[in-house]
Length: 340
Image (cartoon, rainbow, N blue to C red; front, side):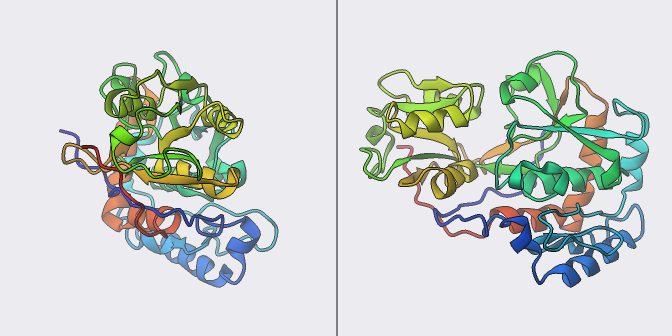
């Protein structure tokens, strides 16, 4: 049985800003270099294989290098280094596409709060930080990590992959597990609905209030499944290649609302579309803690076991909670729309 998602689902407010989700890199590192450097040094010198004190390497608002340095005022940052877990590192030896290198994929582009400034190599952003934490725990230094880009839909198709794992808010579902493999969860999130403040959906309190809306959603996502199976609008949803296309349709009034995961919805309304707001989030159903997100691998990739060992070590050390708190939880409760 898959264990409960490592990171508990979070409720988040509309008051999101770039500063709240890590800020731009110049602001993020200002005045925090000493803390970040100390944290990274302590983490890098912790006993190997124990995961001890790994949480100290996540410094608020900054990500530090293992040699005790952090980028300041340059618009760049250096990923944190965490203690290697001996079992995870031994497992990963010879299991990657290229010996001694870990190839990680994300979206094109990748958005905050998951990746800041579309630069995953900086380690800034929730999923960039998670990726480097997993890599480090499996024995890969930041310089041993290379990044590639994929579409969301393309990566979940069956067949060989040009990456070792892909991190792009992939919910773990039985349908997807027929084509690809997933790690244990690193986060669990809810769905949300957003639109312009004058939309008829802005005052929605129940699903019935949403069913007459023209709803847009990205193809291949669990948001689409949620719209079709749970909201069940009276007309077919508008399906787009990605959230960027859905945002354009909202901006030109082709649709009334977009359904996306909560962090994405908040970023769109706070940063990308002036005058839009999140109407509310949908609570987890059937006693779950929200949709679990996992690292995505080619089907039956042996590296899955290694990543699970790394995630377990990071979880035990409190590092996953620290990263989640830093990038995803500096917000208050968002109104919940009833599923009744």
